[in-house]
Image (tube, rainbow, N blue to C red; front, side):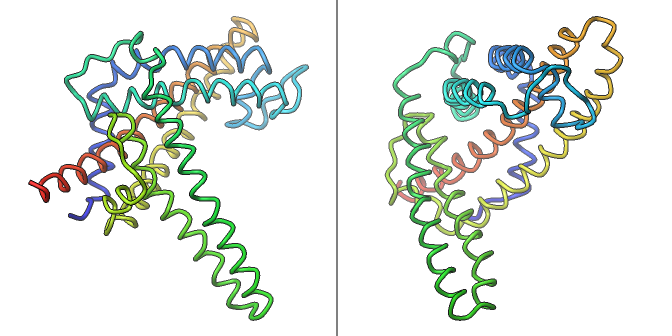
Length: 268
């Protein structure tokens, strides 16, 4: 079967809207933790992304070492917990996912992290091989090297899109190896690319618009104090960020479910 690109994206938005209450409950812990960390480390740091004109009195560089380290550590812990829970909320609709169940580390979260790492490791030779071929070609025939560069980027994105279905598979304890993933996504690689790109564009536009509205509204909160103003603004911005993540995760889950059901029908 051929994945319906825009229908998949539309269904992802509809699913998110229908389950928005569940989203608020699941996203609440990471949103609060992230907002507090960003507020304590550097006032208005997250807001500066949306409005560079906002200045932080006494704050350091936007990407300070402390901010990077804490953000990486927080993301490393929260990402698999939140992502696995949201994948399962679509793929296993009868499962009751509570906040406690969502943020209790289990074996499948290690499997999910390993799947993410495998994706990165498999992309390394693609990147190295692409740059090597482009470099040699550019030295011999410069115009051809210029043409090969976007082709290499396209191949990299294609591989990433096909590998990405490892994530929903690991979230529901479905063991798949590289040949299995490659076979599952055969004939739908570019459609997966389209789903990932257009979902990112759609959520990015909403994220940017909402971010600018929040930054504008933040100025009216100055009466409550700088720290409180920053905390409330960061809470709102992180809710938007996690909402965009939920929609992207749902789109991947939809694609995985459609393809795995088709594969099961072929075997039966």
